[in-house]
Image 1 (cartoon, protein in one colour):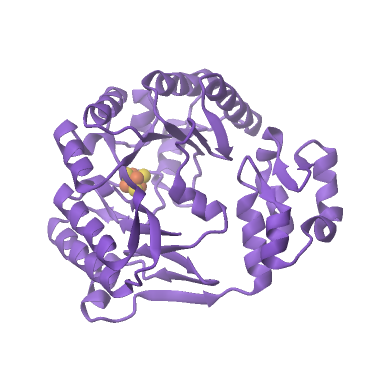
Image 2 (tube, rainbow, N blue to C red):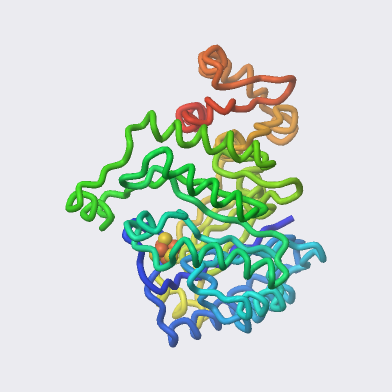
Length: 372
Ligand code: SF4
């Protein structure tokens, strides 16, 4: 079934490390944007089956619950949405309270993903985030009180000045709040990130690589002891709480993206909407195509992508399934390149399953490049 991604490019402030497609909140532009989204979704309507909607951003929780409801209704009218759909809203802790969360729930959202990043105020300030650790904890409690039984937290590791013990403090405080799902990301500093200047000025540095690896491994151990199972390089979940939407990206699935900069993959064709919010709104208003970079993938590219992304999963890749889909015996084709990783204990071939070990996940990119 299809996944539907809806991009919301507005934020209350721009974080000093952020490289996403986003801009400052503007009430007038937001209204025009929501109208454009509804129109784009209606125009794309295929009545095909879909079972997930994911509001990503930016900060989707800056939209009003009534606007979220309107967008979900547009999806219902345009697609055959399953009754047990997963509808995720990314939210920043400072942009919600219990009443607002309850209203999102009533609008049809049934999963929240909070951008917490850290439970240490000092680190949050370094990242120029608007919330405090206390606000993040409250937001999670408010989500439960509002009736959400599927809540995820994002945490970031390898922050400037962060020690292993600091990082584990955030992990432990997350576990104490008992979310259903956690995503752990490594801070990536893009070339012109303002955070880089802040770091130079304040003489903050990131810990050496080995320590980043230790942070990752220690967090995964702790989360497993607390009842979470790792199902992807950066994601853990309680039973039945994996992100069904994100699994489509890793399981060679199909999705349609709506809004500025949103990506889509369907029937072997990949495209991206125009990145600029204004241009997107204008194009939709004129009933012009919003897609750019439309590319029909060759079978070799599709296979490469399926292997590349599938290897991110803790369960790895089912080689029989890949053979059925692409007619390629992956092991015999790539054995020479993959064998050294198997010998080093980074990769395992178990029956027809090829998967990274925990150690292998530390060098996932190196292994994956074999396929592209
Ligand atoms: S809230 Fe998220 S999307 Fe917005 S600027 Fe910060 S990191 Fe970027």
